[in-house]
Length: 370
Image (tube, rainbow, N blue to C red; front, top):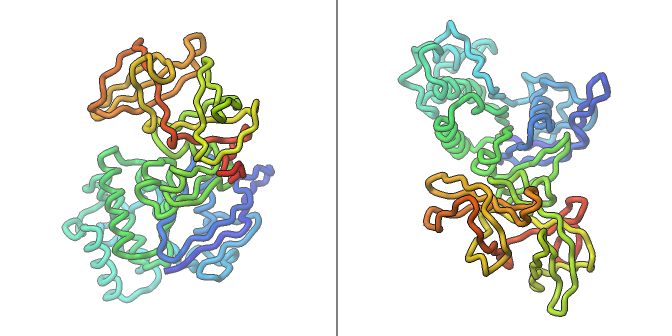
């Protein structure tokens, strides 16, 4: 196994476009770290710099404590699994698995032993004599992973390996990659734009945005304590609702003035210190909202209802004259079915909201910025 340290890592191209902007990150031995973020945020470029496939423009990469900035890709002790399977079509599965070792001059018995181990771990033993054209997409991806396993790297790098698979196969392969990590205990870094993959696979997740890391934490930390609006919206599906509101000081305590003129009292036990007239952002996760009779809670009207069988995704308008002023909520299968035009009362729990400053940074308790 091997740990990884990135210190002020930079990547810029000849036209001065900076795609990675001073990243600092520690990945522990044996950890499953996920890089997640939208397309073009720098996560795959960072992975390729770790692998030695991209030159760095600044900073340091350390593997097992050793700076590897100038070390060739073949000598870094890493193995990379790409989005494309890149299997040799004229070779069998057995030959594809052992090809890297053959190129390295390994003995035939060592190649056979390593190939057999990888095939056993990935349940490829019945497929060893087939060629890639006789394999399904999931089987080809397992062969690509097996080709990395036989090299016995200190770090596995996965660059969106499941993007070419259908939804059912992605779920199956997520389970297999998670099992592989448990069995091997090797450091793994996994790049994806799919936050569901990130949440289900990662011990910790690094959320990328425009070449920077916005926050690093466990799935629970990112979901429950996002550092800013970007993380709050990116983690969770449907995305967190974010409303621009104003603070008020009432005799009974602080309150937020919502779209449509409605007020929401801020529980004093949350420890937020607000200034009257302050513009803040109120974050509400769809699964933390509820609805009741129109006479109870914040008046709202159902604008769109998505029925998914096990749940309803309901889009509510808080102001009839402004369709942008609304929220999305998730209701369970046992909740009452809603239809477009239904009038309801939106209910916000006292401990199920987030507050952000106007610049997007989260409020900490006692009013300090996180």
